[in-house]
Length: 262
Ligand code: KIV
Image (cartoon, rainbow, N blue to C red; front, side, top):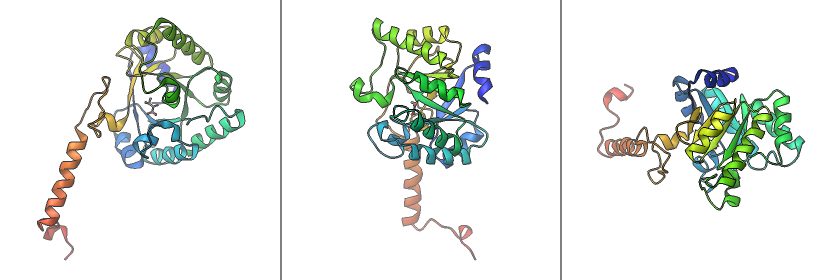
């Protein structure tokens, strides 16, 4: 998939699949999969580094993970997340962050929010860098939201997200993530925008879907929000394999003669 296909998919009514990817070994597997596009999301601060929110992601951290993903998935369209405050410290710093992600191998950047940064988003687009927007539950604003909560539940909040979506489209963004908003609102936004929407916790009517890889693989059995479907019970599978290996080692069943050098 390349940048031109995002619009083409929407026009053809064909959905876009996106999955987060943070490291080289999963990138190699995803490169062989049918998944359309990879998001090096700042959720890596939580999933890979154990922080309690995405505000701990830095430009260096994001660039390191983008580079690892690019080496593993040379054929996929990669979106790199602009981390916490990286578009709020002035144009120069924002462009340095964009440069770091693009030189690490990203095909585009994703930016959370709208108000106060629309000019910078337009400047990035005009600089030749594809930008994906992100509205609804924007996790970098978790402190302002008072937690990871569904957004746009009342009329005023829904109208604000609708207006922001149009403003994001007007900056020249090529796609928009809608996270944790009511399905009817996501449907209305998707109908009114010409750019594709990619939903997570936003119902079935967005133009694509995105999930965190480790979530869809069931790696954390304590995390099961309503919107998440497990496509594997990955934690159980991994624990089973690791315990089998351990048993084989302690019972002298591994390695066998065939697994040893003569
Ligand atoms: O960082 C991330 O994983 C994201 C997705 C949840 C859209 O932004």
